[in-house]
Length: 384
Ligand SMILES: *Cc1c(COP(=O)(O)O)cnc(C)c1O
Image (cartoon, rainbow, N blue to C red; front, side, top):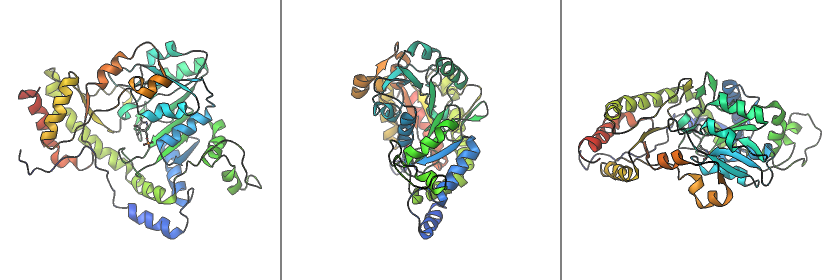
């Protein structure tokens, strides 16, 4: 390993090469505001693949989650069950409506919400369950949807990382009444910032459009369903402009190929670390039966916080950027003041301190052997 080896970033956004072509087309179409031709192409693409009632492009997954919180009619004091091991927007969207996040521990195998602990977290104030499909690996949606049905709760999937991943053959984001996708540049299919709200429950579709259009019935007006366009509900501006949608459309053309290439990289890491796992040096990700993942992330579970810090530093010295992930929300200052823990979050605390993510982007194949060798060196040459 020499100092002249190029540095390997943790993430590098992938461009298909067609983005600027479609952006130029959006420019010459003359409509730059949202809900033009490219936005329609992207929503139709999503609706066809997911089989949802309606897919509404948003400017982020955060925006889609905020819309979902409004649509679920969360009122101050209402409780929403979610994992603590997630991105802040999962909780913040509900806190903005006065909701209380109730944090449930994760399963040690997938780091997804432990479905067997959900029932114990339900109170008379519970309104919704928000499963997060960590790393694009599905939560146990059969069990979660059963519990929700029995208790009359909504299911809102935070499927930010789960574009083109599925559970028992069905797209993630299609199980709950609502699902939320992200097209942020750190995700698999990107538009810089971007997202979508997937509306699976037909009775929520009209109101979802209204909330996204500043609380007006502009969308039905343009369809000729009402004769004037006016303020009818709460809402905000959640739609992306056409330039963003044009960019996203280029990515959608190649979405299958992007996923396939990421899966190859994922599989090469997975087989590269098999013997270290057999020797008990680390733990690799677990993909339960029935989960078709999208290779959003490759992570390793190390033996402790101190080892992880040394690992990240060891890799950094070799020019390889590896990063940990969430500070669990129940241990964050705002999570402590606005949320509560149901039972305990022992696996959350433990795994959050031991997980490390490796670079996974299209092009990393060229230097992947160097990454795998460096990880191996760490564990075999006394770094560990
Ligand atoms: C990325 C992410 C979000 C937020 O997505 P944005 O599009 O950046 O708003 C929300 N939840 C999870 C689990 C994420 O990974």
